[in-house]
Image (cartoon, rainbow, N blue to C red; front, top):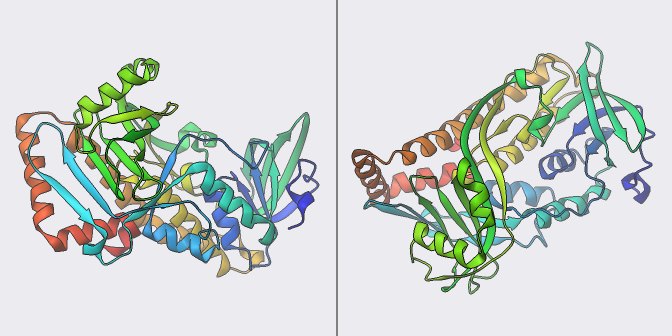
Length: 398
């Protein structure tokens, strides 16, 4: 891909084999997975530039690492290995510790900042033969028996791109509401970076509280003290939590999380994202498929959402590579892709939803039952290994 194919004036295309709506990490992963296919591919990205600023850190599973390695996007990515995960709940006994060594893998997962991952994938795009249209704000998507069509604006100009197959990637908001099954948790994730008194040593935390889980994901070298915080917060408390001074914010976090990492010493900029469960209904046209956030949005507990999207991209690429270009929009491709993802998506969404509901009940019976379940998990190595492999590779390994 030459340099001018990244520039804003590169919208001279009128038809491609594959149009990907959403040029974020999942959409780019699909394009890179098809780099040797010979297909003409266009990515439409609403943002105007390749470099992005996003406060989130992403938990990358071991399975996602393997995919990124195959896409030549892993080397050079600043990713922190998770050697262990400490799982506990406030107000009761019982906890579990998952360790990479017990599961026989080099790491249970990795943590990368969104901007770093975006840049690592974008750097590989010039080699994959795709056209990236930045500043392309999609206004319509439709499908006929012969082609899919994407209407978009760039500046003051309107454009129409047709394709044998249209894939909606990140940005579930582009889906018509009637095509989704929604569940609003009434919560938001408050995200920030925080520094702890003790070094993280590659340990992540999932701390369940009645208000929602608190996740701490290690950032930087094992001797570092920096964590990415994902603090599930009731909707009516989000603005107040964002408005706290750093000192009050850290004191509130300390009270909710405890002192396992010593004192929390510093906090970075904060942001909040609403938490919902979105599961898209099956597409009404085989020329219009959905992956990533356009297909499913999960609660961040257990860090499954992004990894599910990367597996979507990989499995769809496999299905496309097994399909002649002239048959990209036929029902057989859509059927094979849907079948390959059904168990993984259902398992991931069910598991995260059950965890949210089970650990939100503050009744004393529920607290003791959770404690017993965590203790059982910690004392049963085969169960811990099974659970860890689910986190790393998805439901296909159950």
